[in-house]
Length: 418
Image (cartoon, rainbow, N blue to C red; front, side):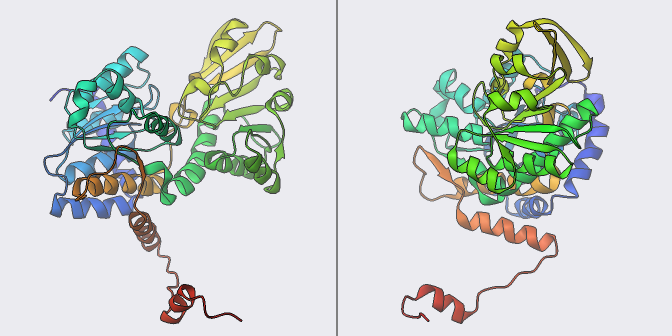
């Protein structure tokens, strides 16, 4: 079995951490148990480009239990947990191509390694696998029958491909499932991003000015958690409705040009490019801490910062100090990459339980579909979304009411009024 990881000797530690994560993933565990009996993915080869974490390991185990041949690479150079990669290779016999801190050349080499398996389905987190397949390995596309995408950033890229007519196979937008973005993006990103910032810096949040760039579901969660730790939260936005919502939620809202002067911490969660630019770095306080929790590091204008940097040094792991031309210091965390995975462990397993349940069931849905889906970006079927929510509530011991026959009739009728 071919693979490329840091050190196979780390497998023991990785296995324990995967076991720990699995204890908080009851929905995926239930799916795995059914997959073991039914083998719905028998003979299916899946190329997965995901963050190589304990939770991803649980998903890989589930897909393999369903009969699939799974090949895994990292979707970010800094997000790999090397002990998890080792455990998947040694214990689960799953080929993994991922090393934390790999350079861009190795990153794309690993993507090509999983594509060498000749997948029938792809599983992506940011769409680098899909874009590589379309641009560099196009001779393989006719064999691919479908795929899934985990992130907002990836969905934006894939919808652009579909709009231009270049997307060659159907993709299910796992990110857009309610049991994904309402929970993973909000509660997962909110907690894990602060976890990464605090682990990297050991700085106090209470009383600080915390600037959240972007008020989508990730931004909502991050702003909520930063305020919960006592920070004075400022939101920057380009969308009128999102900005209005942030104001109504009790946050200060202002342009980044103004926020840059008063913030102590900055974190981008927009999915867009150059949100914090050179002109903003120039006016920041001495010692301002800048990070990103969007999928790609392009949210920070790192080239612009480099052009005004006089000296740079690493003070702590994942903490780089840039001394700029005006003598002030700008602190960049995790090389501008996903700080929750660069300096911490990513989302808690209990929230990834729902996200990865969507992944597993979406692949099963495509495999079993009697009619091939169009070459477009498709939503997760509503019955899958509802079933995952129902299973999660049951695992939490929460019961809810169900509509009575009378209530169903009332909701379906136009004749009954006051």
